Image 1 (cartoon, rainbow, N blue to C red):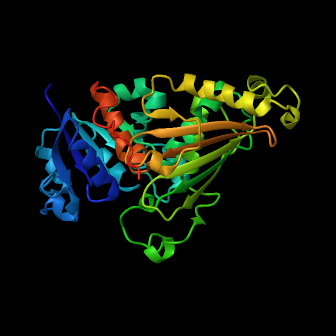
Image 2 (tube, one colour):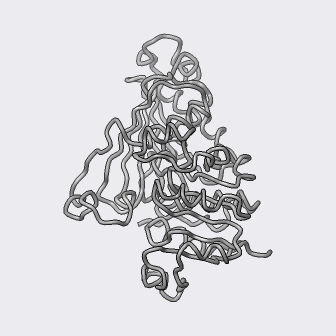
Image 3 (cartoon, one colour):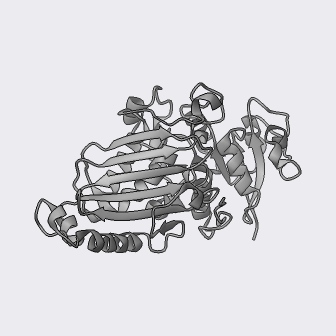
Length: 366
């Protein structure tokens, strides 16, 4: 098999180094170009010493794309920067997987409501496909531009998609509570990710206004129709990587029937609702994700180390007869399933490779 030639634009951050780590061991591709505007001329392994003797490629500026034969380019660039590169590369033969949020939303107008920047390439929204293969494999296969999902949205959407698709929860009152490792804040130093602020600490941030809220809501509505406002609150954990998400949703009349809670408004009165409800929900989730190799439906709540350094999303679903809530808990590695691994999964679909090629790593635990 002739290897596909890929480039990584902006490879000096956490996500950039992670995509190179995965691609360097992928049997179907060759890394033909790695770029950095700030570290051009240095070796990649000078920036990331753990690659010494493995990936010692010279870093170039993005101008090198113009005289490099490429089949696909990964844009590991910040929000508000990628759009300029997508515009610059428009019409080129290679395909693009963009890690930023610049083309994930439904329109440039919605983007400008949630991101503090005017969108410089609204034409890109016509071609962009949301890159979650568990939901959009057919669209991804032929896409020229794939918008890789955000890390928080990946865990949240996979947690809720079976419920909204089946139409078994109330449209109002969905609560998503997520906790992330510090690498989600990026590699640049800031007060937020200083050791003294993160270590032995735990905090919520972006309350009521985090930009991933609208991404989560938009995709879930695409899957299952209009919803009331989704409540999303992220938290920062004193760990390096991983996202644990807990979702609370109320079953509607169809949901109560599905889980055996009867037709009353107080499912807490149904004695056997909890055990019966869990079994029915597990069946719903297993059916929805059948044939999806990276989603694992678990018997017990997952932990971050259950998925560390892997492309898996572990999901636990249950029903609480006392409160009447459906509870979903998911775990992903924010740098893999939440970023680089998912990007390679999208690439595999785009090239017609086996979806698991190069990303079937076993989680690292401990």
